[in-house]
Length: 110
Length: 113
Image (tube, rainbow over all chains, first blue to last red; front, side):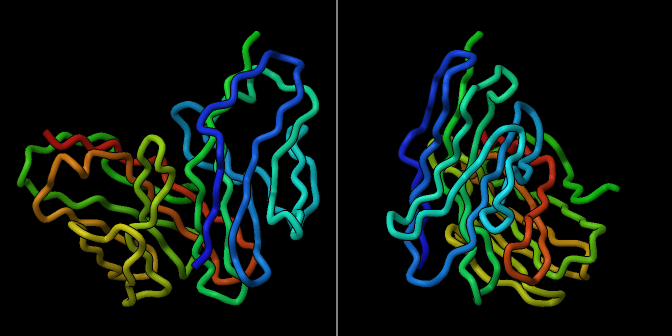
């Protein structure tokens, strides 16, 4: 069975500092990986997916199959980035059910 | 676009009471899910439905039942609520293909006293 691990429950940084939210996974096949974000009192929404190789709101994430990681990075954090971030995995060729990590709360101080 | 709509947004139940959480999506998705969100535990899958008329257990199904009456709607029922079921519940839906995005409802904050 697949598993997603986000080792940090809370990450606190100052505005303008670099941010890295860690995500590690375990899955024997070829995974599909995503980052979702939940701003205060809002629903979860997709931030980015590994296959798109895109930068959204300044965030990027690279799939490292050797280290089984999909860390989320932003070079300069903004206060509006404060939110809950979830890493998610879909097992390719399976039932397409997203498996989520426990989430990391990012707080960006002014 | 409504997307995924959940009702109610808030609910307080007494231990032993029953209730049904409603979820509907207007994106013609086959797959629908119910998750619960607890501090430090992330999102855990309760039940899912791959198509109309089919349902399967997820990671934490005990104490819950679900119904997929049609393609749009997927309801979650608590037959006898317990304090351990105090949580935020999210319904979601997605297409049946790889690298697909899951769309979430706004959540139901349930408190069982």
